[in-house]
Structures are given as C-alpha cells and as structure tokens.
Length: 465
Image 1 (cartoon, rainbow, N blue to C red):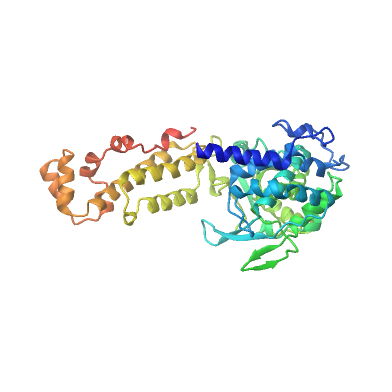
Image 2: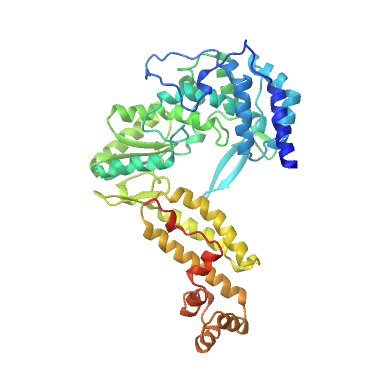
C-alpha cells in the first residue's frame, strides 16, 4: 500500500511540475504513436525541422521522458541525486529549468566517470549524467528520433526503434548463406572517445534548424567529465552512459553506412560494431583497406588493427554469436560468451558462499533467465544441453562440498537409496569434489528431476531452434 501511495505521489509531482498541455503549446504528432513517421530519404538537401525546443519541453514529452528515466533508474550523477528524488526536485525547479532551456542559458553538469570491467580485460568508461540531465537528454531523444531515424541506413541496427541485436545477427546470417562467407570485421578504435564535435554537430544540423536545441546538444558534448573531484572538459568524444549518446553515434556513423551502400557492400552495423560480408579473402582485404582510408579521411576515426580482421565468418564473433556452416548456417553462441557464462556460474556455486542450495538455485535462475533471454536465439541446442549438464554437475559438486565429512556424505547417500557398498566407496573416495560430482552415486542420488523440483530452469528448453 505504501509503495502504491509513493508511486502516486511521484506521478502527482511530475504532473504538477510539467502541467497540462495548453492550446498554445507546440505539439509533435510523431510523439503520440510508437511508429516513427514515414519520410523520404533526401541526404543531399533534407528538409530541416524547426521549433523543436518547444516540443522538447512540452508537458506531454516531459512526462513521457520522466516515466522512462524513472523506469530505468540507474546510478546518481555528480550531484548525488537519485531518480526517487527527481519528481520532488522537478516540482520545485522545473519552471526555472524550462525557462533556461528555452532561452539557451541552461548548462548541463559534468558527467560522473565510472569504469566498467570488460569481459576480456581492461575497462569501458561510462559517463553518468545527473538524473536531471538524463531527463532532458531523454526528452531530446524522443523528439530527435522521429526526425533522424527514418533516414538512417537499413544496415544499422543498434539503439533504434523496432530493431534489435537479434535482427542484426539474423541479417549477418543471411549474407553468409548467400555465399558471402568472408567477413571484414571492423573495430573502430575508442570510437566514443574520438568523435569530432564539430563534425557531429554539422551532421545534426543537416536535419534540424533550431539554434537553441543545437546549442544545448553541443553543451552536453562539452559538459566535461568529473573524476577525483576534477572536471576535464573534452575536446572530442561523446561519453557513453547518457540517453542521447546512442542516437548521436548513429548520426555520426551514418556517413560510413552510406559509403558502404554506395559501394554496394553487404554489411551490418550495431553501434560501433560493423561487419562487411564478401565472397573472398582478396575482396575482403581490398574492402578493409578502402574503408580504413575512408574512416580516417572523412570521420577522423582509426581502425584498431589488433582487433579487426578479414577472416572466414565462422571464425569471428558478432554480438556474442558466431555463424557456423555455409550453405546451411546456424547461429551458435560464441566461445567467449560461453566462457563468461561458466565463470559466472562458478561464482554463484562456489562453496565459500555459505548459503543453502535453494538460494543458489534461485540466484542461478535469476542470472540464467536474463542470459537465455538473449542467447536463446541460438540454433545449437546441443550447446545448451551441454551447458545444462555442466550446471547440474556444478550443483552436485556444491552439494558434496557442503556435506563436508565422510559420515554425513555416507548418510545422505544412504538416505537417497544408494546401496551401502556404493555409498561407502563414494563417501570414502580420495578424489576431489569435482570428480566425484560425475560419479554414479551422485548422479543417482541427485538426478535431473531433483533439480527440476527445486525449480532450476533448463537452457535447452528455451532455445529458438
């Protein structure tokens, strides 16, 4: 009941802050539906959208942005304000912020720099805006997406409405099945750190003619990064972490997409991951050379030679999947993704956690549901079957370690109808828990049905194949 009252209070505060849409408010019909409006491509001389800043701060758009920011939650920025505190802050300060936005005097706060460990080592650095700036960026995103998205390339799939990583992988698979079995796997070196602000703003200005909004977007690019109490104003780059960054990256890389289309290449791009599919190694090397030159000259970006490659498609990963086979291909889970899964399962099932088996299974299910929600798109159920078997073995190992001593182990096996001889032999074995976990005694004492009764989910059953 209290949560319900708190939710209603936050909703009322948002309503109070933004008010109702009056007859004089500028409105954008594209915000009312889910589908972006149809628009003809005109990359040379596009019609420009005007009067967008009024639409950004309109009550309807701001309420929608507030709802999205509250749903996403996330960590606080440099001011320490949480999303739970945002509605009250808006009820007190929104009118002043709105006036600053409309007059072009609003100044975003620096983003908080956070290092996220990469699966393969190193860190990916995110810039976490304050919740107020996240709200404004989200409001801008909702207005700019219908303006830019209809004009983006069909080969671009990252962070776009009605498009997904699964669609990108399926498209890549279709190219391989057509006979383009070699891939030019492009890795753009530190893309988000090397975007040229002037070049990006020039591309944004191709389609919008609202000087106040253009000034605000540039202000977000120039807001700076706070680390260790010091603010570093960036000359280049668009920090990852804000709602607006993905759209800006798509706008910037659209020139790459258009060049690939002009050259007639089969390609799939998801954010800064770009794969180009060709019929031979020779063609791939020619494409790699040409596109590397184009990126350096036109977009001032460098290709990471250590991570990029021209190789058979079945040897390279794309969005943690791998396309195996040729005429009849299958989507398989990349070896790196499987390795990450096993590492996480080991953490959840480690003996030193000191929690009951039921808690371990519950934690496994929480992780596995999210994992299979993405990787269930694979077409190799045998891989998932092997992972299921390995997970159950990890749990048998966990059980054996928890029993600790020979007497307890013998008693548990006997209680589960294991013969005296086999129970004594297993309980007194000199072998370690991992080897014992695949013994006949533990397989009979703790069969697959035992874990099913505990509620352990099965990966294979959720495979799309």
